[in-house]
Length: 78
Image (tube, rainbow, N blue to C red; front, top):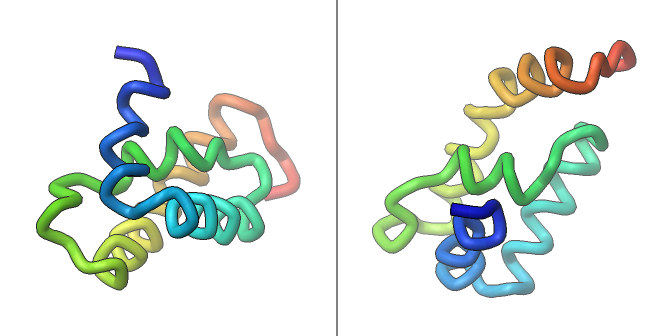
């Protein structure tokens, strides 16, 4: 499964504008994040979650994503 295929259900659940907005918010906090990959990994069971729950889950996953960012990109400014 490609990243695009994995991201499609998330985009469909949130809608393109909300998906892009949430991705942009997370990337503004940490520019090295791959917003699509991060959101796909951080959020599951999308159909049953409210937008605020999705944001809460994404926020809770950020420390792990930062570790991944540092390990894979050697991003020393984080």
